[in-house]
Length: 164
Ligand SMILES: CC(C)(COP(=O)(O)OP(=O)(O)OC[C@H]1O[C@@H](n2cnc3c(N)ncnc32)[C@H](O)[C@@H]1OP(=O)(O)O)[C@@H](O)C(=O)NCCC(=O)NCCS
Image: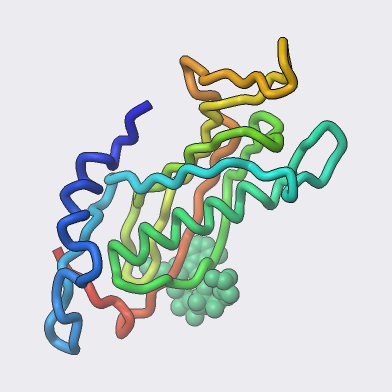
């Protein structure tokens, strides 16, 4: 499965290890993500994150991943981690289990004065079946939506270090 950010990521890879600008006062850095452009995190759910019977994780697990993707979006948009102000429209659509591979995607939908609204979705793209062998697992032809949410984060004016 090809991530929508991969082409953009390879473009950014040239800049690994060095910021795109000095970022000193009065000299903003260049943004590396725009409104609507997607950031992606892929992660495998570990046995150590299981909280409920049947190998299920708790609901907060996916929100933690959303927080990480939202933070990447803010760093690339503003050069700052920002502060999470609110989550809304949280929907947990399917149980998440140990062994699942998840792809978490986030993108900015609205830019306010200091607030940034970010839409987040999590899809399962590999599932451990345990059949016919204990170690059997399937790569899902159509990734399954497991959760979605909207977050609002705040980056104070003086901490916004980037421009288009
Ligand atoms: C989030 C926080 C910085 C907001 O500070 P604040 O001084 O109350 O913010 P303001 O009332 O000036 O609002 C700032 C912006 O956030 C928006 N905002 C604040 N709370 C919001 C909410 N619950 N929902 C949507 N937007 C919200 C405001 O509309 C405003 O947007 P704008 O600048 O684009 O017009 C502050 O409440 C805070 O520090 N909270 C704790 C954050 C935290 O610890 N998060 C977890 C770890 S990251």
